[in-house]
Length: 276
Ligand SMILES: Nc1ncnc2c1ncn2[C@@H]1O[C@H](COP(=O)(O)OP(=O)(O)OP(=O)(O)O)[C@@H](O)[C@H]1O
Image (tube, rainbow, N blue to C red; front, side, top):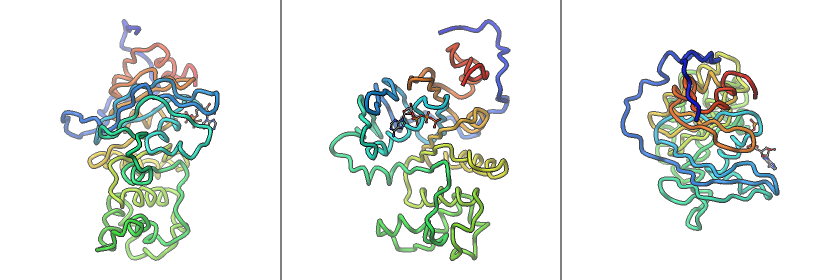
């Protein structure tokens, strides 16, 4: 731990505004990693990560390319199961239950821990059918219209698509497609939303809408976002975890503290753009 004599670190971000206005209630832990390690074959991608992620907050995962951000995210809903060479060690608890324990059904887990990807990936179906998809699979078809509408409202898309739900999802703009993917993810009422660079393929206006939406979603969901964009992490997250090369979690804390007064010199160098 290094200490700074002067608080005047020139960071690349503007952090004078508090990132959220949500009431500060005692944080409940939604996800806890204890010594979580991941390797792909011989290559270690995460090194014994200890991390407690609070419920109903936005947690940002930042760090340079290849530092294991996506790997960490993909552990949380066991997407790494789909990578043959991946081995996972240590412990990962979701609401106190071992995510890699025998009692866990990965399909059921992914219903509780939804995911939104970098590039919007709606199905080549209507707007309605995209949102209804998971609900139909789960047999939750009573008041389907109402549920579809509610998900679109929560994803801040309803006003733009009302009256045209039969239109193909592929005819929407990129930003609308991403909000549709968020609607599709929240329609099945998950607890956690994982977002892997959800705005990096979007223009600034569409990005702003996604950022506003993410802050709103944290009222109901635990949101974990991987981003390359430090200003974005500073704007929308409550907590920030900084991973550095080799899959090491170097620092984790309140976003304001991480950006204004990081404990680690390496994190300060990364945030101020000295590398990465
Ligand atoms: N499916 C895979 N098979 C083998 N190696 C992988 C696989 N996925 C990731 N890796 C390796 O694991 C390390 C961490 O990758 P990961 O994608 O988690 O990093 P990241 O921080 O998300 O990177 P980026 O910011 O570039 O998306 C990298 O060295 C990467 O090459």
